Amino acid sequence: MTNPEITELIAKLRDERNLSDEGLATLIDCEDATELLGIEADKVRRKIYGDAVYIRGLIEMTNYCKNDCFYCGIRRSNTSATRYRLTEEEIMECCREGYSLGFRTFVLQGGEDLYFNDERMCGIVANIRKNFPDVAITLSLGEKSRESYQKLFDAGANRYLLRHETADNEHYHKIHPAELSPENRKKCLFDLKEIGYQVGSGFMVGSPFQTTENLVADLRFLQELDPDMIGIGPFIPHEKTPFADKKQGELTLVLRMVSILRLMFPHALLPATTALGTIHPQGRELGLKAGANVVMPNLSPVSVRKLYDLYENKICTGEESAQCRGCLEMRVKNAGYHIITDIGNVKRS
Ligand code: 5AD
Ligand code: FES
Image (cartoon, rainbow, N blue to C red):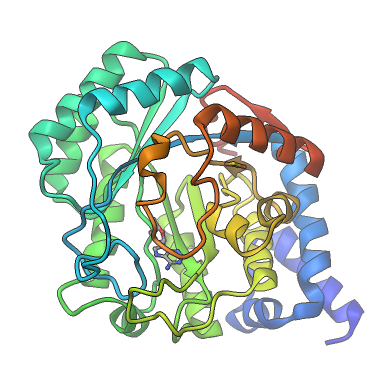
């Protein structure tokens, strides 16, 4: 590809918010397009969101998980993981601390832990709702029945994050055990949307066996789902998983995907993820400059942070919540943006 050809393709993507599969594949693979994609994505993001970066406080409430995803460090077969669950009181304490630090969105994330059944989970959600009526309660607790999602919504949850992980069925089966199905995962996402949740989806970049065509399929699936938030980050191997020896996702490929997402979904909330910050010291800043507009500081108690190890060398595991919040504030500022502490709803055109 010559430079004028790249420029033309990016302009078309920006203007039409779409390209042919071939066009998308060309940009995804084109190392030389990384910088220009970032520049155009940043322009689009500034037009809609200015220099605003939204913060979401992440509370990692349990690392018990009944699933066995081949890539994930908290998979049930990892017997060397030290398992923990936060108590309801500990979760409330994280929220209180987060609220006083300016957070107006809490993300309760965890493995698929049967201990937190509907009754317990609805109790926790209702308790947060009662004490913090003006916050957005986001859940990220994996696949559930439509009935369970409905109960949690009725208890006061308003957002749900569930990455589709990969939209290609064959690829899905290469990175998950047979009992997990891409059909059910996608059904969960559409159920959540129908119930009225603001939905976040996303995928790993550079996961084992992923092809460029798989990434194009991810973009097509997102066009169909039209989520409010799209979270992507590099795959990072974890030594206690079957993918211990697989290669980590590439920084520039993640950045191109962030920029392509910004151009295709100008209004979307796109986090600069912890995984991105883990593979490069300035990963999150680079993500913001490439079009991302959300960061998710860790609000979990420091005592459990190292235990929520989905992948190796995860950052922010030694810091207090206030430090993590302050650190990100500086990083966002140095990258040329600034943190907004309101609830941060997606802007719909
Ligand atoms: N590398 C990068 N991301 C991972 N996730 C799980 N395991 C890994 C890994 N090894 C991501 C998945 C999941 C999210 C919570 O973390 O996409 O949805
Ligand atoms: Fe968490 Fe820097 S963002 S410590």
